[in-house]
Image (spheres, helix red, strand yellow):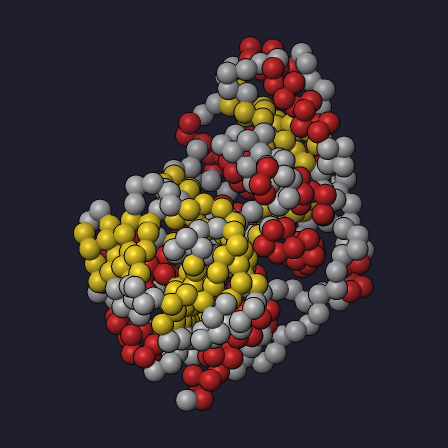
Length: 474
């Protein structure tokens, strides 16, 4: 079986030209009811990603058009979804997007799909600050979709039913429709569990370490770094009741009300370069879509290999610059960026982008000179320095961001940045660490670097493109 890789470029990530948001009328989305299932889990590491990938691939094999989603601020799992389904995997995150944003993304992306498969985050009820806010259960309530629970039964038998009972009854508004038992040790193990079933068993996935994806410090390897999909699809086909999973998905109810999506598209009049390669590969699809709708033509390029394109602004996302320090230090684009920045081009870099905009980056392989646009030096660390949602306000109007605007996002990094004594910051966080104990958004001229992977607000997009248009006219 050949997995669809439509829209996947030579770096194994989605091409910008294929990123488009279908335009729906209010009439077409008001009665939308696409079969939908959320693959939730009892806890992190229970096998959600493996099961979700396999279910998506098995449905594709049946000839269905599968729309994938990922709950939470994850960049990596969606690359696997997209590679399997041939459709962009969208983020669903109530904290960053708000409930209406989740509804808009869901209603928009499912247009033309036969079924939607949504991979959850952490355990089903794990949300913000110990609450259910921004949890998989929260999303299930917003879009009114059933949950198939993945339960890791390694090391237990009948006890799993007490666990399932808790998940089933904890919140009566969430429909836990069935269970996929993962890491089943033997036929005898399955038999012991079968005796106490209170929910439909939709799958019995055997223990097999070959099904696990490789990981590193920021999570799983990207889809471009592994081609192994067939094995997990075969396991799902052999050990899961796909017909029952489809029937479960058909019990999903149309979200009510599903918000109108206004047509805000306008003619492209400004070019924004977006670094897309092995070092810079963490982007929220909706951020790029918002830039496009607001009049930006997105120009993908490799900061590792390509010259700097003729553009009016630069967006450097996160990723793995620490794995490519030597190549980055010799990058012709990074060198050209110094000149463009000095001339006033707006440059925005987050996390990995921030590391590349400073004076140097120190890794296990040595210290490498970077762009030198920001007054700081970066160093990789052996321990995580920050992990979690961020929220703050733009406080310094000397940047292109409007003073007083709200910033929401997520941070996760194994590095630290030491700034010069006279460093200036444009964002003050009320949640999260940022660059320096709540100071975020290091600025120099029209260049901004953050640890926060921001969810772009309308104010952010308008301000960024206004600065790019001003540079274009200069």
